[in-house]
Image (cartoon, rainbow, N blue to C red; front, side, top):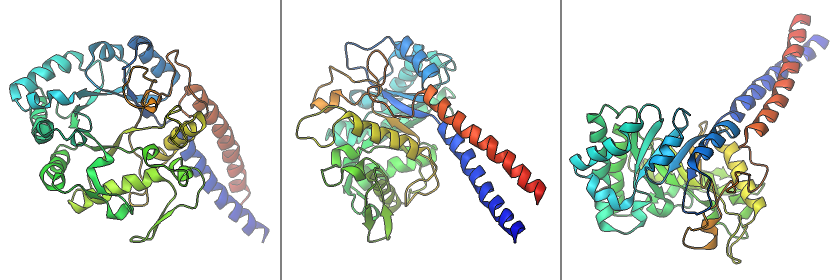
Length: 378
């Protein structure tokens, strides 16, 4: 009987060892960030790059143009860089000669010392209602890919474009997610075909912040809550982020492209906003971004996409004091211009990760030794 108890304990302990090992692995996973520059008080890009490399676990950076000073700052850092072609340049990129010139000017001089992994054609183009941009979007993506082929960079650098959740006509419950009629067949379906053929991701910008109310704030922030049931699938949702992603997945599945990878191009939470906005403070922003990082790197996935991680870019690296629009738009930053955290308890600094890892490793060492002794005794 005593031996059976010991064996049972050993089995439980082996499970704990696996969980601890997974915990250590997850905590060293990197996260992406959006590096916006609509401000007059930001540090030089060279300082930013060194700070990200040596002081944070941020290993992916997205910029909203192809700023050469920023690109040069990330030389030899191996941080993955995503660059962007602005919306107003989309029509030009449908011309192969102009697309090749853009690549020659903005990409080739920086390869391979700068780790450019992706070029985004525009930003939330389908939400602009600009017919010229929208109708030229997929042709521009295709032409840019062709330009990359002619320079033998197509396997190294992928082409995509990020979307707001405004591309959905329905998102609740998640299983009923559908793309907007008209865009679904004529724009999004050929885009998904292109992305699948080129092994590129479909990028979305989910923002639970913009959909939260006083009644679902905990649900939006990944805090403890009663959750939401999808009556169609009987799946239970404990956070709005998962529900938004699964609505996108459902819409993709309707078009037959559920196997295309989904990447989170933007998501975040502001610390300051208009008085009528709900949950706009440091604690809420800390809860959202901290829980987000832990969630997307955990391997748990979503109810419709279980057992997977999501490449994710938090918006934003800094507050941007010159950005137009509502107050909140200027206050999404993780860091102040002096590169101190706007709020604590976000697992993004290397020293915090090191402390967490040292604790986990100490426990792992103890449990390993104990497991050895139990194995020897049995």
